[in-house]
Image (cartoon, rainbow, N blue to C red; front, top):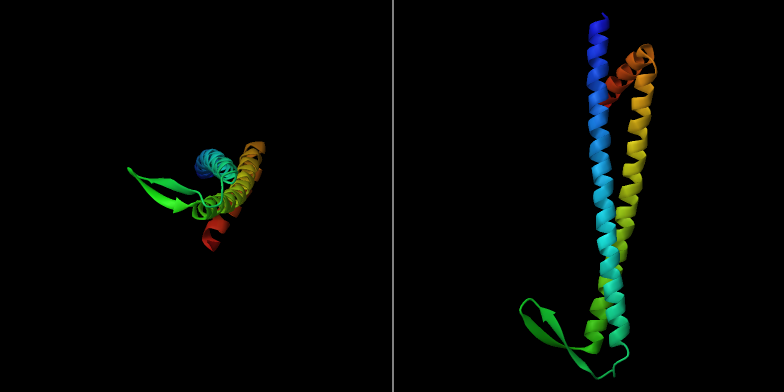
Length: 136
């Protein structure tokens, strides 16, 4: 009777370990994406502050692929503001996703600690986890 519980415990433990590793990788990816969006936002802001020093009637060229398009200062300014706004929204979304993932990692680590505490408690935890899977 102890062998099936041990197998269930081992299986649940490995599943939780895999979940923790996967979630930690997702958190790192979110950090990288947030950093990149912050750089994009900063670049757009610096570019915008530079073009705002120019005369209003100034026409500018926007690089698009291998060509340049002549546009007004106002059009470029609006594009840069929109770029900053979109980056800020994506950063907020990623921050929320990151906090959810961090909570998920913490819960999984707590579950692993509980499993390691005692075999009897681990058997109960496995039963609870199996019941949760059935509800999903």
